[in-house]
Image (cartoon, rainbow, N blue to C red):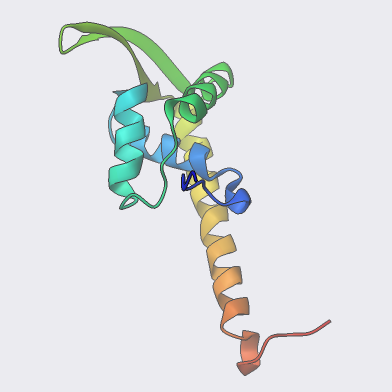
Length: 119
């Protein structure tokens, strides 16, 4: 029986947010980014290269990332860095994420009266 863990379906947009945040800290190539996501989330999120490379290509096409060929440890790699537009998008995404976390936390704690609100 395969016990491979997958990431929850409600994580739409989270991989992009993590990619932008980690690349804003320092430029990286794909595999290094996959490892950085694992390490920076205490292995809660484990996105494979098959997930990360399409995100990198999509963000690059949108002008949020810039890729350049560099030699890393003797190998030619595409290293990605965040553009000015990418930094702006990251700021907006972080603000949105914080509002979502605050709203969900508020609801889980029972709203203003300590009990879940019912429709």
